[in-house]
Length: 199
Image (cartoon, rainbow, N blue to C red; front, side, top):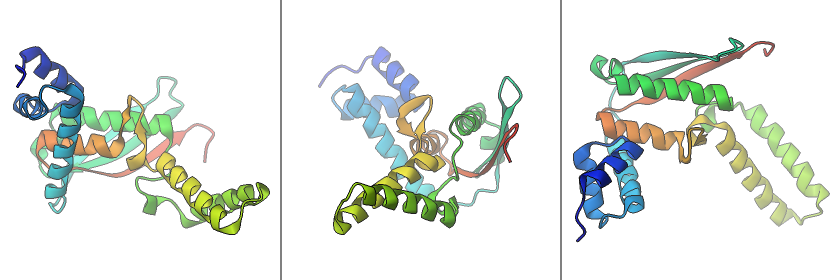
C-alpha cells in the first residue's frame, strides 16, 4: 500500500474539485494511481447524482455570459435545491463555465428530446443520401445512418458535449461532479444564445 502524500491529494483535488477526504479515500482505494482515483471519483459522482435525482429543485441562478466583442451572449438557468447552494461561489463559477461553453459550442438543446424532430429527420435524410451514394447495402446503410445520427446528437446536445475547457469530460460529467461536490441535486434547466445577425 503506497503512502498517500498531501501533494497527491492536492493534485487530485485541483483536478476534480472533490473534497480532501474524498480524494484521500479515492487514492487509497486505487493504490495511489491518480488516473484510477479520478475515475473512482467520477463514478462516485454518478452514484451521488442518481441518489439525488428525485429531489425538488426550486432554487438556482440565471447566469449571463457576454463575449468581449459584445456580439455574442448567453443566458442559462441552472437549478439547485437550496438558496444556500445558489449563493455558493463554486456553484456560480460552474454556472458561468456552462454559459461560456454554450457560447462556444452553440448546442441545439440540452438533451436529445430538446432537439426538434424535423432537425433530426433532416439530418437522417442527409445521412441516408450520403450512404446511398456510397452504394452500401440496405442493412449496412441503416447502421451507418444510426451511427452518424448518434454522433450528431452527441455533438449537438449540451449534456453529451465534450467540455471545451477539458474535452476528457462531458457536460454531464461536470454536472455529476458538481452534485457530488455540493451534495445537492442540480440541473441545467434552459438556455438561450444570442448572436448579432442570427435569428
